[in-house]
Amino acid sequence: MSLLISRDAKEMRGYLLIIIASVLWGTLGIFAKLSFEYGILPETLIALRLVIGFATLLSILIVIDKDSLKIQKMDILLLSIFGVFAIAFQRISYFYALSLTTATIAAILFYTYPVFVTLSAYVFLKETISLREWLAIILTFLGVALVVKVYEASSLNVNGIGIFFGFLSSLLFVFYFMVTKKLREKYASWTLTLYGDGIGALTLTPILSFSFLQILAFPLELWLLILTIAWIPSLLAYLLYSYALKYVKSSKGSVISVIEPLSATLFSVIFLGESLEILQIMGIALALTGVVLLFQISRTM
Image (cartoon, rainbow, N blue to C red; front, side, top):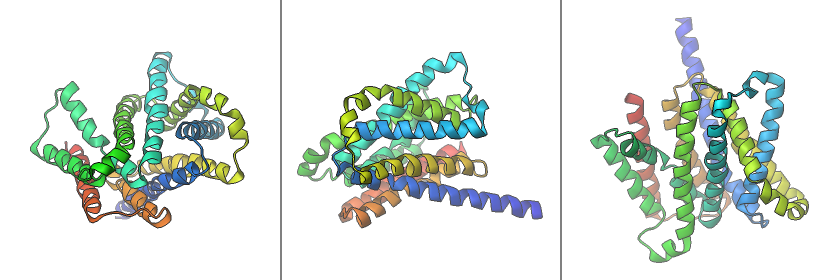
């Protein structure tokens, strides 16, 4: 009996940590938007975030887990591609979506990635798509259409490029999802994060070189925002989520993590003064219903 209670308590702790991590992820758009007000470009912000994240995580792992630094030579090429596309380019795409649209639109567009995972499996792996999955996909895209205000031509003209980057960030995250799923059989999640951030930072080194003088002139307030982005909604949130998965199945954790776009929406309304129309609110509900359905279907398969 006591063992069952202990197991339930650990599972509840896992759920709580996932909720906290999701809320922290939801703050990313707020901090990024505040950073953009100082004139920093999305690619510069991401480059600094990756450098700081890599240096911090490397310092931690050297002290507590040196074995996680080891990788096999046969995986260097895949990790390099992973770092360039699934980390550097994916993060830049998401931050461009944030800079060109709203925090809410960027978060909802990003969370279409389960749809693209399902469609990729259908196209490339010849997996069948059930009626429930098609319903979930339709709900998701119908919701997204309402969130981006497809019913207003002027809104699409203004946000068109940002919407493109939002979908691109989602598509690139599908690659992230597939590579991590393959490599987690060999490596700890921290190892993948370390090398992904490190290679991503190396990829964006030319940006830092060209922006060096500008970076030196950044005000203290901007540096505090950059450090916050690197440590709180990035490193700390990922640490909490990874630790929580010891007690909660990843499929269940994925369902709970849809709190992220909800919290991003709430924070953007409270702190950034973003307003939402009734149709957009309905769209958020439809899109996240579709995403949750896809997560639940993947859990039962």
